Length: 478
Image (cartoon, rainbow, N blue to C red; front, side, top):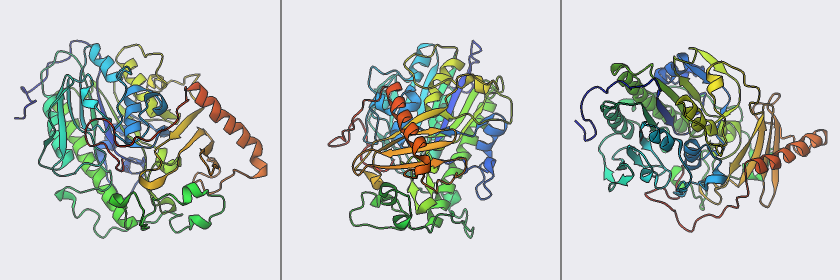
């Protein structure tokens, strides 16, 4: 029995407030689920959450990078308001509250298991924490920090495949006796590159043909309308440069990338299934809000690219599935634009707690109930700051509406992209600079500046001289 397993079987919560488990994978595209028609990968446990709950089909992150995204989930704030703008180990400011801390103050037993990445996160107000703080820790022999009530122990090396190790510990924690509800952040490493498969999946996809995306063979450097910022980033499959800052994550082939990526997701799905079974065994499955999402999307060969960071659809789209039979009709879907900003206010409202006025997301509770809110967002702000760094993606921000997208690479040489996503969902035809769409470009650029004002964006990015914060969250691909 592990150090955190006290005895079998938790006491039933004394009130009707739900438990929460928020499962996150790393860089998981919505189309990398068999639920969404993928004929290669099989994800029965993630699919189950969607089949028995709701799938949000237009879910996005507001900064397609690991650390900023995780800070946004915890705080309900934009990166420019927390200062968690890159993968350099930055910490959420002490004066900025995390929604999990509000839950703990209200009597919830709170925990985080897995990839924390955010600097000094173990020192926050968790009942229990077991996190590996870096961006791309070892899949085998993971180094993790353990903390209780903000008191962090020295990092320790654990033997085994990281997702299996973390799941074992999470299940032990679920079995502890408690008199009230719990909230668990269960944040997996998979399928973060470079993926190392568990031994049981080494032969998965042997002989399987991986189809190429339609744009895989296009030459971006000569493609009309695509800006240099997109074409010249150092994130192309099979490209090698002497000065690359991404050598450790260089991808040699599309087949290698996709098969390892899918195998990592299968390993994550298996462990998600173990969590679901543990909840069932404890009689807590239907008392628990189970949400599944990802920190960002991922290019899988579109324009021969991998990684994320850009504002294009493969990078910013994330899955979001929620199972809670007390409220959510099984098999339902919703097409409203929801953001990772919305997780914190949603969980707080579901717990019966007030949502702090400073949080910038919207509670999805009406959408979970199948209602149509009158004032749901019609557009939103995207931001990315980490440059120069891994993959050399230049700083950019933009606005996305239900139909249009406007991207501004705002440092010299200033460049733009603009797309009609209804007519051009693959973002093939950059409309910026086309006289027919000059008025639309003017309107979207103005709206971008309005959104910056509305969200309090006065931030000027200064990369740290060296990684900041606790642990190994340094200059790595995250």
